[in-house]
Amino acid sequence: MKCKAPETVARLPHTFCSGCAQGIVNRLIGEIMDELGTAEKLVITTDVACGAMNVDFWSFDTIVGAHGRTLPTATGVKKVRKDCLSVAHMGDGAAYNIGMAETMHAAIRNDDVMAIVLNNCVFAMTGGQTSATTLLGQRTTSAVDGRQKGRDGSPFHVEKAFSGMDIAYLARGSVNSVPEIRKTKGYLKKAFEKQLNHEGFCLVEILTPCPTNWNMSPVDSMKRIRDEVIPIFPLGEFIDNGGDSDGKN
Image: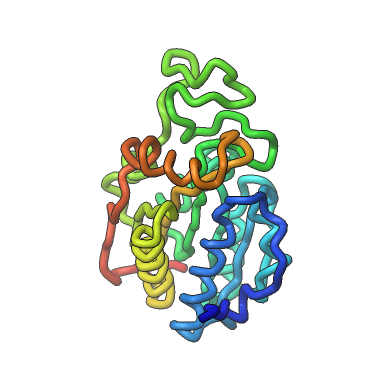
């Protein structure tokens, strides 16, 4: 039996690279919107990187922000549209490199917005350069001999940086297997529900493959997430605070 895609993300064919997980995450967002009945409230600000191609498939209201500036744009949307679900959709390069200051200050202010960060450990759209989350030893177009701790630093862990912050929710999921996809959907749905309750800033990071820049097949890319990436970036919920927002947004 063919499984019907949510109408909100059913525009096909897609134009992502073979094995890219953007489509998986898109479907999860669409399924959650159908289940919550809140598609009309959703406004997604996407980065100019790979995720910008989503505007061709989503039927949600969408804004393409400047590179790394998705969160301040999403926050601005929330300021003027307090009833909407304002989401910043971006990659690890936009969230933790170019937009690091914006990501940190959105958390410090506990802005009433949601961030979805697709972490594939490289700058994907611009050619596979080293990002904040590139693994030690991983080869990229800007570190052809592999990332070196003494030269390039260690991978960035958002759960360590946000430790102790008074935000609503922080979780990390993956798309390397069906069970993990289901768990990731649960994390996303909880974050959306917290947004509906105006509980504050939520960030869900999702470990995703980039077969093109990893120079791997789609199957091997999923195996790499399981064997190499997850041991460095553990999955689960790290912050889950209740609905005690001060209503400043």
